[in-house]
Image (tube, rainbow, N blue to C red; front, side):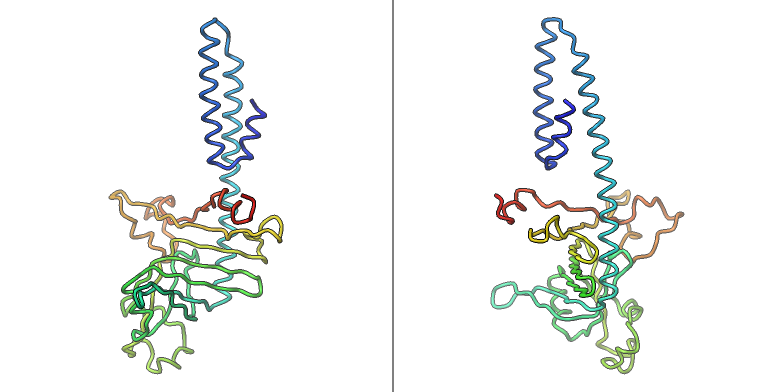
Length: 274
């Protein structure tokens, strides 16, 4: 039984659950058969309890490793986006009856937790018109020194003028807006609420695979926004990057990132192993 527990832990989660369910059904059948002839099944129950305890320890260990991985991946992504400063902002729009991607180089500002990104722009640009029609966007950042690529996915909106002024990047931008952000009629800022993050980093050792010659997918983190009591996303958890005060509620309601695991069969197929 304990050997089966160790074997199960090496399996993918979905396959492990199916095997555990099959084992439980088999054990129930054995218990019924033994019980009908008056046999004692205490030893089976003890083994089952040991296996359950081993499974709980395995789950706790996996959760600890996952939290550590998320922390390391986020730290690598945050530093790469901050140091790279520039990235490719991609919108989508319909052209000649088909949806087309539109990339352009932009300066990227981001919150400390990468829950939100900001891009200064001009109201006359195509990207502003495009996000008003289709808000889903992506921001791709490459940091050459650490060989790190980060992609942020989310929904974009044009901020109000007062909020946009607060995101003024600095005096260098007076080349485009000589009168400053307040006086310029075209100055604006796009806010992206990030809900998905992908990262591969050679320098930080994130999602590089066990063998360099094997293809390995990027680490994918999904952002979970806790719900308030009325079922809506808490207004305090909109990703402004500011820490929530202790008096405003439990830290469990803050936005957090979790790992999205690729389907093993898909990875095997992409690697040519299935």
